[in-house]
Image 1 (cartoon, helix red, strand yellow):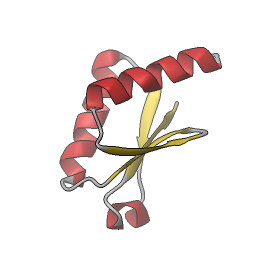
Image 2 (cartoon, one colour):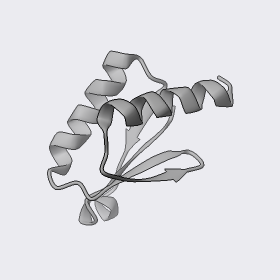
Image 3 (cartoon, rainbow, N blue to C red):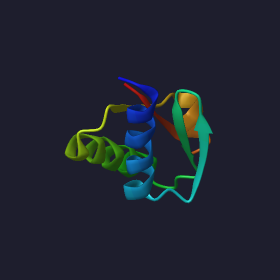
Image 4 (spheres, helix red, strand yellow):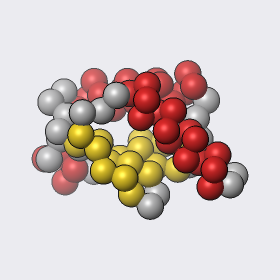
Length: 74
């Protein structure tokens, strides 16, 4: 998969998910300031599957403390 395809998938995800706060990373995007983290992660996974994007959700306990998770290139 080339970089253009990766960025297109990521752009499509951001457009559909509509995060209020996010930070671009070299490996994807960090979604920040989430109040209901569990619901947001579930929705992100569902959106990735529905749109058949080459992305994956990544999160750790430390990220959960800050109400964030990452969507990274798969």
